[in-house]
Length: 315
Ligand SMILES: [Zn+2]
Image (cartoon, rainbow, N blue to C red):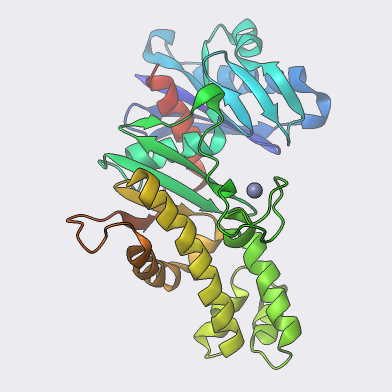
């Protein structure tokens, strides 16, 4: 049996034909063209589904799943709110059904990517996993006993918007002090720039010049070269990241927490000190027989289509 997984993004509609065990048989992609409106985007989604299902016996197709940005309600098939698509309370399931005949399963894009990592990626075989994406913002998903934690009307698992410093930095959500306002790549770049302004002698200036811009790597590179101001940026970033990750451990005690996104590319320079800090902050860790493993995600951008297909399999 095969399943079609769609990753609906603001730029591209990516689709894949995926086996029951998460292997991709075929992939297609086409521009989303958000500016043409929801109905035109649904024409694009239908075209991707048609392309992937053509030549396949419909009896060998188990269903279609789709990951969408924003708040989505899988019970009703509606996208309640998707800022970067400009959609509000849109009946996506009906729109796709009328074009293709398929009953769509939908999930938030970060949640379905987490489902893929939990079931067939870095946390395969684990009882539970939480995925934390460190990108422009901080996203993620919680998977318990093989199911996404979606909450009432699909709005749960906004891990980036737990406050770790009351009254702290402004967040894109309107609150202050959110995990995202400290652990995102955007936050790391903000702190790097502040430290560079305060330390004209810092090796961060040379590191930024080598890469053409200040980015999430700048402080890590300069810290590895022995720069004290850069090390302070890295240490503070790790402290804030560890605070949020330890909060996740204390709430869910998942078997695995896995990081993805640009900052996670730092690998062991990030993971080794993070594990140490999280262990110290985790409730009862001195007595615990087992601990949450902190790892890196392994599926990359394909987690979106694979997770959407695996969601379809769960119906
Ligand atoms: Zn926030």
